[in-house]
Image (tube, rainbow, N blue to C red):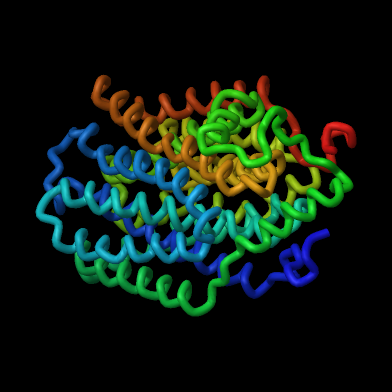
Length: 434
């Protein structure tokens, strides 16, 4: 039991839960405005030379490297100053981004704007996720993560479609400036006025666990101190606990898909004759299926566990990526992107839920931050790898095969090293938990 003044549960904290869903929707809007129009118009609007695959991927590499570090920082910082302050800081940092895109004289400005976006995303998305986990019960983690990622990635997909239409109606620069400023200012106002800090819920849960062992004790990592240092948490997540290592590497590799969809897929589609708005809908089909499916894939894992949704999700997503290059029509591309999106929906909320399952509330925010560090480092590593594959072969298709094979291999690692983490389905023994 937790402090009765701070009950756990979605229904018990519905108002704050909804506010956090709105926040992550706006976070999705912020990244979505960078994902469709900018790569497609890199040559005509921002001066990237044709065939410059490594230069084209530079802004995604910058985004991934910065966001991964900020995820780590955000988790640790939020346990010291609270979740709301970190969220607010992330939105303040996002304020210059739309103006930088509007004024950009060259691609270097886009890379710089994307660095700020990485800071914003690392701080804000981390906090929306951590805050919801603070105020919900263990048996709702899959649903919580599913709703969080549903809201965020529907936001990403909607923003890609809306900005494509805005670019055609108003021009790329003015359309992105208008959309971006509306998103950031609205998010700042909502954070200041309505969002509550959820750190007290996490502290209350920690205190409750010290008083009595939960009915289904989680399989927490062994040999970890009650107040672990940043270095100790990083070590547990990165090499000491095989289960968490398996989850972290899967998170890293699945971001190869997102890097591909962000930077290579729009260019591939335009090169094969798709219009800007048609390309927006094809890319959007990946995001819409990914986002929409998480409404039930997260909840599904609360019943059947995290392990098989995660493993199968890696393989299905990789298969969808491979299918894209095997066809040559808008319907085929949309269907293949949808398959990749469904695979992503199986794994995306449930990798995070698995981390939350087996990390104590006292340092869960930091553990999620480390997981998100490794996961979003996948943007940088994946963008470099797929850019290099396309550069060496001179063919965009090579990038798709690089990602598909990486997903297959990573899913196999997860199969061998991972285990079921849901406390009800694979609880620790009472002796281990006490």
